[in-house]
Image (tube, rainbow, N blue to C red):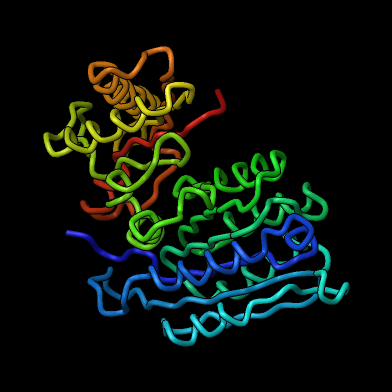
Length: 324
């Protein structure tokens, strides 16, 4: 029952001087090439009217390399990924890390699109001017004419860089933050590609609640109810098992509703839904002290409320890991 819901994807690969100094560029390049190989074929079942367009941008200083966003062609993308090299004014050693410029350029590249788009940033998380970079990322997410999911993958072990990439990954409710060490085999890469391209409908089976924002889209709720539909049990069992493997991680459980009803009513309903998931995880052995809940009501839809299908997608719960 899987379906591709992301119709535009841009892979951003950091090829700046910090990547040379930390010796992480070879890993970033290899990971970009592996992600291209893991992307689904153009022939897979997809949301009607969603053209499949993918691009790659390597960046450092004022230089760029890669392939412009265009109809999916694995050979072209693979060749562009293979040509990635250190870029910037400092020659072989790479230049500055201009996140702010790259995010603005990506926004322009995607501005003619609509529906769901995804941006995957592979980097050490060490940009020039962090505040400006964060503001540019916010604009990228907020101004896209549709839903844009920002995913970050850290290479290297710089702690501040990792923290910054997590902040970027949390800008969009469908985004995520990962470390390259969690994407070292074919199964892990396919799971990540599935999360990015197939969206919320399959993330619960592949996502890691210990380190990623996981949207329990398959854990749906009946209209005007906060009881789980029976199909959600197996997914929550898997989530509980994974959470037991990272006992130091705390998780915020966020409830959401469709648009029918008053703000106050939906706020209460979303909180009840989040508490339902919390209670289930506690019954499955997850320590209650690790789980806190928050209800957003109808304030953060991820699909149109004009259709039954869209409203069903909006009735959801998301798990967001927090620092221990």
